[in-house]
Length: 393
Length: 192
Image (cartoon, rainbow over all chains, first blue to last red):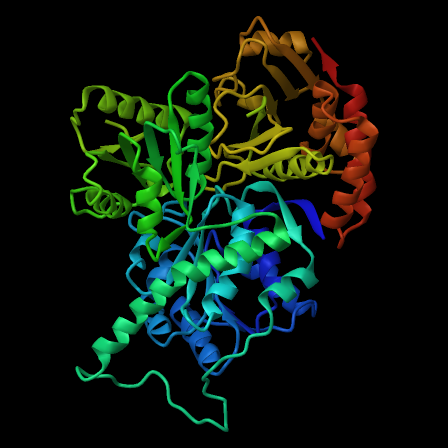
């Protein structure tokens, strides 16, 4: 049974966590993630879930406790944002290398300094090389759906990796939105019971985990993590197809919006993809063949799908909500440009940094991007590769 | 994408504009429409000017920007007129719903606009008399329903009753007052 409800992104994620009913949740509150933990802890207090809730004193401890629980054989979760994720940094790598299927929502927020509580993706981008799977969500619906699928992806025997489910701070987390939620039983059946293969509390099969690993095997273990990431590509698609059967909403690695015949395209993550789609629709009505590519999965990077989706496009703008300070553009720009290189199609790829620290992305900003792309397409000339949107001169 | 109705709320921190925007979204969503309700989060201080937004549509809404060109402007605090650019970006036929003791004609002069439609109500007095405190947010919703006709009033009240019961589980004594405030606002709002 499906029910249409009005929820904020945080409420939707907390609802998904309630329906998943994990064994352990260890978390520390941070704006704009706080409500997830607050709402979920009320489910715990009211006996609506069986979860052991651990109120820890920091995010480093939150992920550490989740690692301990997962290594012990439990289905474990945490949740964080920004500085919290930054403080978690070293332990996230450990969760990934120990191959622990910890699912954790990250409500994207700018990193200090200057101190700021609003949305950008610098927190998630900081962990993009940590070995966790990264899913991105355009709205509350996708955040809810991604959470449920994340459990299956993380725990798949070929994968066994942590999954970070991203959604935009405030824009998605605190906005009332309409979405369809599934009933508890459907979700319960979909995520199933977690049966860990190897775990510390298995008395019959005593093992040790998180061992010292020198030049003799460290390299091989890292290579295995890459294999797990490669496997995740297929598993994510399989889980997405299966999810369609219970929800009517299918998920792949990317969403290709009106790209089939597109001349110009924008590549963008999370809520801004919605805004870009709205603008693309308006431009289509004026005869401009505009499209939008939204990577749903950023790690592993869906190279083949992106290449296929953009092969016919003449000019592409990658919109990054994070800075790299490489002075050569944002993080996703580098990935996309690299991906398109082998096509040898002479696709012009430019970069726009936007929305840092929660700067509003307006329709006219996206219109400007498409207008620039049209000029590039017509003249074949790129004047400036990296630009900043909605920034004071 | 179909026509999206866009709403911008102007208020001061503590007047309940965020709550009203989110509750309005919930109540309108109950009737099967697609909605968004979100505040502009700044430094949250009592009394500081704030904005909140709604989008309402019959089709899914993609846009996630702030509302720049609202069809409807809700002013919870009349002292913001002239200070918070309440007319900025509003089309000629825009609708203003203002919590004030002044008449629509007086507000029109204050706003300095010719076109559009202006609704006024004394939401502070209404909430004082019904809820016992000057919190103008719920009466403003009554005025909104009257001004837009977006949802039949009885239906709206039924949804609000449910939502208020959920929100005020721990203090049910305020539910009746809030409902009365919405109803009085619906009846007492003046238009020009």
